[in-house]
Length: 171
Image (cartoon, rainbow, N blue to C red; front, side, top):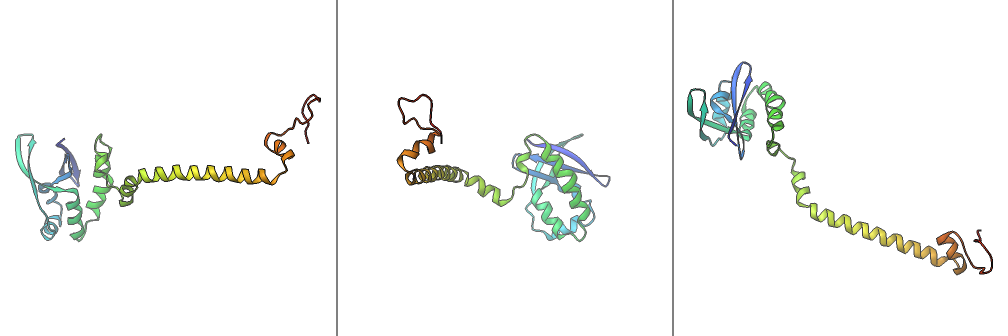
């Protein structure tokens, strides 16, 4: 995949690299944001380096994964503008791109729900069968409480107990 996207934060270019395993920000671009560099020194980071193509050739850059950028933001004194820009402009734009919806963070219960989906389907099937059997037994109980000569009326709405008469007898 390795696609480079260019964004602008307060007239400063910020490059974002989309790789197969996630979203990466170019550290050189983010360190121009006031307070980011000092906060990045406080955060425990494991840098990733990659050669990317630029307008004049290629260069080796230091990349920060999306989660590390948010860790650095938590160490910054004033991170509101940068985090708002990331959450409202950059990430939604990335998530709209084809193939990038897999980078969208999912709540923990959603992964559990997907893991339990076969069990939930089996449970729903079992509940449907149980409800059908309960309905059947309830109908049988009602039917057994009615005298035999009235059961046909209860089930079918008519009786045909007089063979010589034409039509049906209704109550």
